[in-house]
Amino acid sequence: DSLVAKVEPIHDVLAIPGMQRALDDSFLRSIKQKCPYRFEPFLKLFNKNTNIISIYGLFFKDDSINPKAFVAGINHGPIFEYSIAGSASDAELRKFKFNNILLWKLIEEAKNNNCNFLDLGGISIESPENPTSGISKFKRHYPGFELTVGHEVLKILNPFKYQIFQTIKYLISLVRRT
Image (cartoon, rainbow, N blue to C red):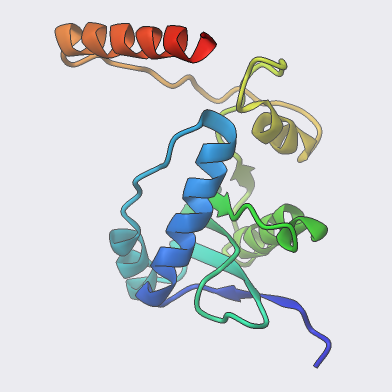
């Protein structure tokens, strides 16, 4: 009865609002914007074939529906990919090493599915100006070295709209400085 939090697989669409809040909080902390993510297809695939997708949530005792933090991974045969994660901006949650606990669940899933590698995804250069430095530092902690497996490519499909977007983004940054 002294259990404060528990880690459970997420199967139910009822958890989506809590997952979205956790994801939005994570994005707001790092890049100052929310992340619209479509959890429904992800959960449908998970419920059809649980050895391809794994989703775990950390739930507090008083709310077994809305996770305070979550992590999801995808099995690609020999590679298990850390796909998406989020955590609420919650003082009680920050008392736990929840990221390690959730990542450990994905490692267990990878091992149980005979995967040889855990791909934590991209990392960035650590610097005080980089809003994703903390995420990259966490990823570098496991296993303590970096392995380059490829590079992400950004393809601008509409250069005119992209230039407008960049201009607006620049103007907003000027307004925020004043």
